[in-house]
Length: 401
Image (cartoon, rainbow, N blue to C red):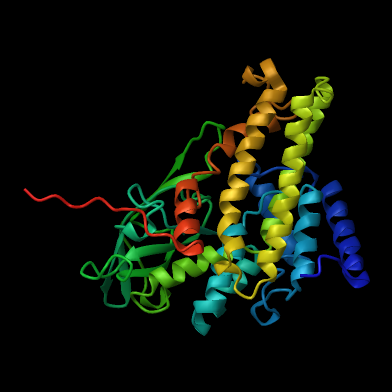
């Protein structure tokens, strides 16, 4: 991939930066820098207004094809948009799950009727989505889901439990991986359903985390219903469709995530400077190491995105393990730089007494990075088995009595 940008690309960058600065210095100043990891519960109404302003300006779904309501931006310009968004302190997106996960899935796997029904609401920021994958006994082993869906006339009837469901308490819909054939092998008996959350038979319980926020939820389905037309693909195609969704998760928006990481690293550097630690050789080496690894992360991601088989390339297999470990280590560096200050959990943000300081928030939330979206252990199994062709990890042999 050519890592340079044309004059036209740079003109696009300048225009995007100007618009973002005007909005986040002006009518949407209150949401600047808010709603990121560990802070996703903050300022819902204000961030929803931001979603509507993005939509009105044609700045949602920038990588979607134009015929589906997107902007059809090239990869270079998607990279520019997400980088400038993070650089400007754009807030955490309420529409992220619909825009980056479900939308591309429907464009690739959905029927024309499903595309016409659901894509416009995502583009406009008027319908929010949640991801119904993980369960208490089906996290890393996603194919072990036990939530069932049974056909009843013109409906599917859904019963079961999902957990760690981001933003479900604000979403109108969830895409839910269900077991529709109990007699089929566990990877074969799954289906991918679109389920309305505002109905009898759905209970949503927020999970309060150590950061004090509660963006994750438990979701209980007790004979909840959805139309038979709201199945993506055919019954039994759920594993294929669900993995397609996970592949889309590694899209161009990850470049914006990395610029957010740059902002976190700068916060650590500022703290080290304030505490007179920039001349400490160990601290300097750790900061330099973090900077170098962040640059490697960027170039690896660009290579992955430019590959014709991005989701299958060896580079793609290492990305989640790499960034999750890097971000967790940065949180630990932040606490080491703060020293005794790092132990003072009462040191709240002066602008919001209920909010932890950014470095405390970084440390606490980054502990989860190596667990969610595929734990480090599972990522290593994927690399060894699919990337390196090593034998599968030994499975326990069932015992008989």
